[in-house]
Image (cartoon, one colour):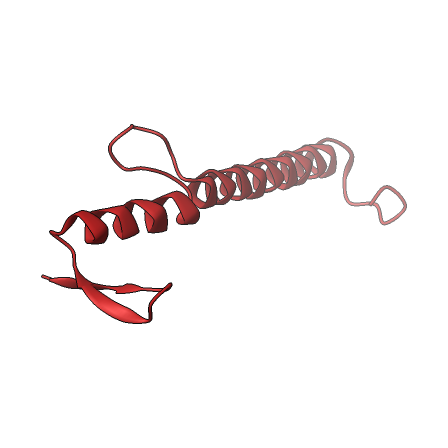
Length: 83
């Protein structure tokens, strides 16, 4: 477990249990996108979740298109003019 944190203003290390150390930790957490104690989701995590959802939606759309084409081929036979 860490006992010190870097103070970017003075370029020195500060004990994390001190008042100053706790303030530095709080500022670091605010900068990276959230406070773990307020139940909010950090901005970087929200962006990652949105990107994953977009990838999943694209994958599902591609799967639906593949199923549609396969159904057409089964029904009408293979034709390069359709595809």
